[in-house]
Length: 245
Image 1 (spheres, rainbow, N blue to C red):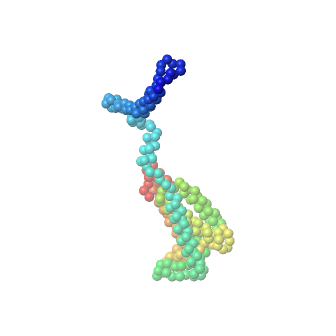
Image 2: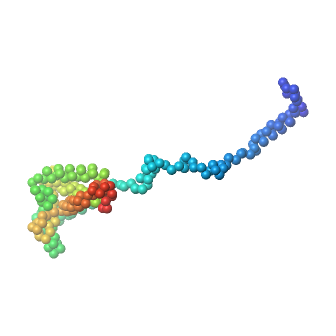
Image 3: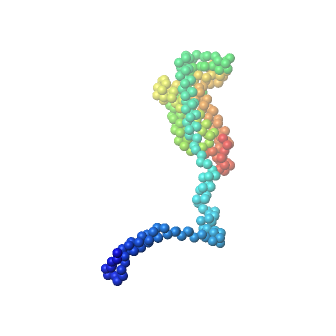
């Protein structure tokens, strides 16, 4: 069947027009895609700008090397607080046991006379030193505890964490006695009960667990300071090399 297209002089059959359109659609759908151009051997051998090595002053390269070469260290805050908590629990537990079982002024002989349990009350500093200045030593203990807690955030040396943890636990242990025991707030007597080689502190002043922790932590701190170990774990006289705690 043929017909004349309006405005045109040529005649096309309906079947031919439809077949032509069908052919063009099929030809466009099945037309093969051209493969991407393959670079020649000479072009592929040329260095690319992206492959060029970074300069010595590249900040990203330095940052990656620094982060990959030196692992990030964490503060020893947990170690300090954990050790302080252990000292505090031991100190308070032994004091409660002595107060409940040993009368004040009594002496209990242990280990063949090498150790005596002597229940006394101390209103001075450690080892019954400077009695009568209870409020002063209470305020000092509070200041020491605050300073140690603030220092813990920048503490990276294990040795210093141990030393300050012992001092913190001992200071808080005695502070609890000064706050809550008789004769009153900030003036309470600290419970001392350890006497060595003789009763009633005849050979050495009577002390407690908190006193022992404070002394041990102080001695360790002096040793670390003499060795030049800083809080961040480096040696003050040897540059920035990390110290071996």
